Length: 372
Image 1: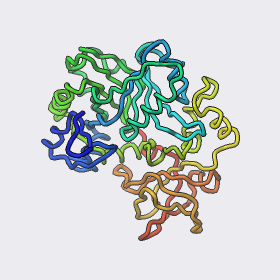
Image 2: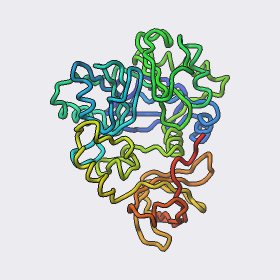
Image 3: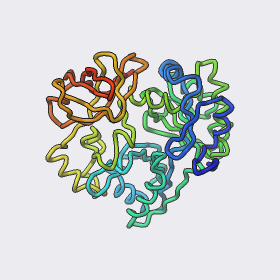
Image 4: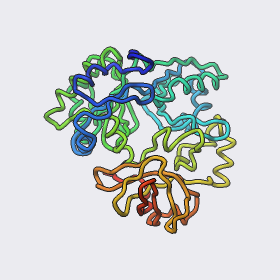
């Protein structure tokens, strides 16, 4: 990564984004592309064909050594003991009181080698947290500046990438990966992963930062005839929201716990004595006080972050954490926290969302809002 003027960082693809006349903005401490041809156009390209995202602002931490597994088990709520080489899992890491420090992906590269992928805005604080909670002495390396991450997402994604890959991409199962070193676009090292943040078939490609622009340009050129388009953070947000996926800083924070966020399935108290285990067991046994719900607008209106959620009779009961207009459904959709009470959480329940300008009706809907 390079530093731009001031303190905002840039990814290795910064010049390429400007060449494509992307609209740029600050996100997570980086100057990132919001859109190229338009959010809806890019969103529909991913749903129907393919889109290519630069997500090199995400952080990567290497965990190595004899204590690597013990460290990962101590750090995360999920069970890394279920992983085999070439497999990944989604999880969270929590504070001692059960608040979410971050959500992350864990890749098992070998019994003593793991790759942790963390959110851009949390890169420094997450790495410091890991160092503070490493009593077993695993070797930790912040590799975020050396690794570029490209997300090729959409039904045509494997077809586009296959000519540049020396193994059959169809053989990589969901949440599995291959160490491609030399077998993907002649990169000295690479990870080709069947993961993504869009709800679509897709790949996440970890390549050396020096190879990023070559890989980006090659894929865009090769994919043009398949309908591939560069896609920015705007479409990334609407896609993940349609898929019902949480965004850290909105739907997940240190003030939320995984049970109330609907992520109880990534908490495995029987697996290890991880940070926050005792608090999370208590929350599980007593039930969370709040619940993250999904909802769809029943009339004209677009829910936005921090809008108020009301009961059908106008009582203020919660807050919107994520909201947008769904390009697929052509209506407003959102996520938000309300009391953990069937009166507010049952699918089909009528609620209201209130902004400063107007109030409109919504209906509780269990995510995802769109599923292939």
